[in-house]
Image (cartoon, rainbow, N blue to C red; front, side, top):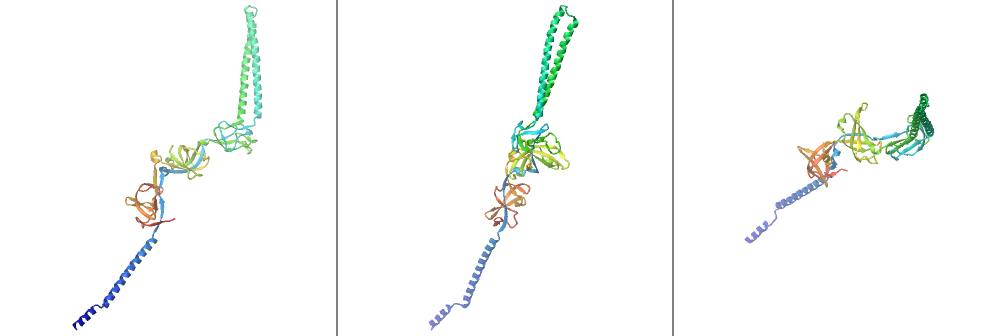
Length: 408
């Protein structure tokens, strides 16, 4: 009986409590709910972070020369030659021969053209005849003088013997003196005839037009058969020039500088020139002279600039822009390459300077040392290298390690 009761008690103890079963089921449901909530939060954060990548614009650290940073004044002007000549004849006449064309190289004293000189040649022939006649007259007078000298010598012998009077001897002496005087006059006339001949020959040379210096013909202003004259004859039918020649070795730059800024320009100052036709070609030059007068209408002063070296692409009357450079530093210092960056990419915090360096979709906050700024460009003294990509106009949302995407 007792054993039966003990068995019943043990079996009752083995029964599962309904309250305990309900409590366990509720705990598992809570755990699963929390686990799902955390998973959803992680997924949401990943989705949010992936779609919350900031868009940025980049700028690049560039390596430039100090010359690009040291312009103190900019101006524009034209290429002009110091030696340019419109070659004209000294006389009026018709062009009979022409030996030039545009673009032709000529040497000094080279014949460019000839003017019809028929009349001058006839005058030369007449002047030569006058010289021949004058020489003949002198020869005739010299023969008569020699004969008069011999006669005088004979009569002096007779006079010494007392057979001739003093008056007769004086007559023969006067005849000889007269012939000598006539010879002197004839010699002067001969010199005058030769001088006239030289004048006509010089006039003939004036009918030949020659190049005044080495250069290139840039304009042919007359044709064979046209009349030319050293002065304008009116009516528009007479040319005043044969051709225009330019010495290409004398090309220089001429600019007008506002008189308010002329103090920034000095002789021998370095200049960087850029032709309008070749905007990417930087041409070194230097100030040759500052013309010591001003234009009162334009309030400008003319400055002439010499190219350090000439190039066939540089042509007269080309438009050109120039940048006058600072000339206070040593040559070695002025030629030293320098790093530069847009000023808008630089952040300043207290006395420190930072930039955000872009690498493979992530930015790195980096401290740099900045130099002087000019025209929205800042010199970088340390902390970066040429080619580094930097975030331009960074926002406060950027931090070290932030993921970004580059705007195209």
